[in-house]
Length: 223
Image 1 (cartoon, rainbow, N blue to C red):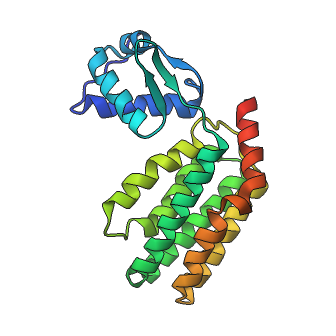
Image 2 (tube, one colour; image 1 turned 45 degrees about the horizontal axis):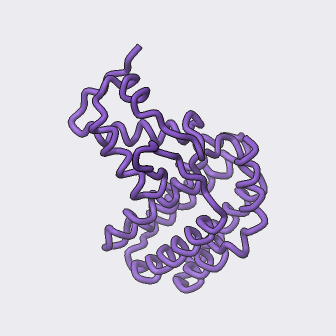
């Protein structure tokens, strides 16, 4: 049965559909996307599908191979290293630049989301964990007056955690929550430099997290 998409921005709907297919494992890294099959499933022409794939290629999710089709990109450890370094630098810069915009309401929201993350880990609710973590970081990332920061980081974060299924490492996630707590405490102490340091030199440090990262992506390759 065809699933019709009657929307204003058809390209964006197709984009979200493809992203969801990657997240749920229907499209796996290294696989080839069958444009004809997907167009038929959605009841659309190939034009919005191609437009969505161009968007995905720009963000690094796929590679369009002339006359050969579209391949879902695998994520190499060097890609992860580069992503961690970039995100750490940007988020630390946002804290240093926007610290005076952080209010007690923001801090309360950070505490609430971090507690929710801990519960997500304890109950193995990994489908909600990524969204909760993203919301945590967005509390301060959205304070930046530079919209390019979030436009740049969001697809990278999604790229890091697509295709994961249930491959989460319990101890690593709890470690992340502990770092969130340290980060919040430094904000309460009005110490933006130490808060930024937690993000850049610990939370998003590839070398600090290397063992977990290698275990995490090795698990993903096996699933």
